Length: 105
Image 1: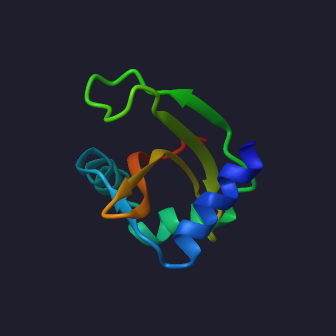
Image 2 (image 1 turned 90 degrees about the vertical axis):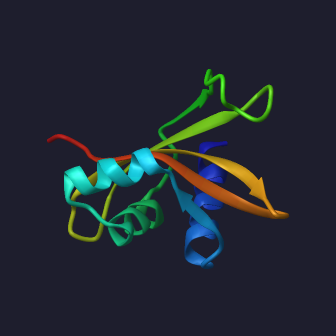
């Protein structure tokens, strides 16, 4: 199942489909000095999704909402941690990034 989800992430990113980065993730990217290209490279390089967790957020839109954790390097070898979810916006599947950061070595 993890490999299947990773392929979904790859397809959304590599086919230039819709992906969205939340405000908190943008702040975390700025603090860590990473940009959207680093994130895309990391997702494309991911061989699997490390963990799938059920969202406990009171702001979730559905009763069961899953978050996907990916830890993978960009092309320069910098490990990037991301957590996101699949949503459907205007009839298109979107991968929404909630958290993005450099992984401490």
